[in-house]
Length: 128
Image (tube, rainbow, N blue to C red):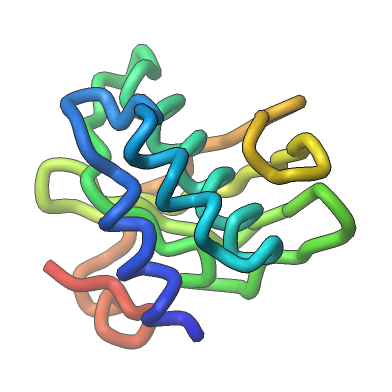
């Protein structure tokens, strides 16, 4: 399932700022509820990082890189995520809560961590 989640995320992340348009919303609606929750929160993480003052340019996110996300109802906690920006991977953790249909973000907090050393990439499903 790890690899399938990444593939779905790539379909959803379109447009210069990853804003969720109608096409992305339609793609999310086709997913099972748990996958939709994960993908919607991953999309929100990418949008927030893109707008962050750190001036990072995220182009991929792996929510399970260092630890599996924890899901409870309409909430997901992903303490072991990573995202790629300008060819480097960064640690990421986030907490996300959505509406019951998993389409609307109700709350979102995130923290960008340090750069992931290149020698750890393969072990954590991080591709160049």
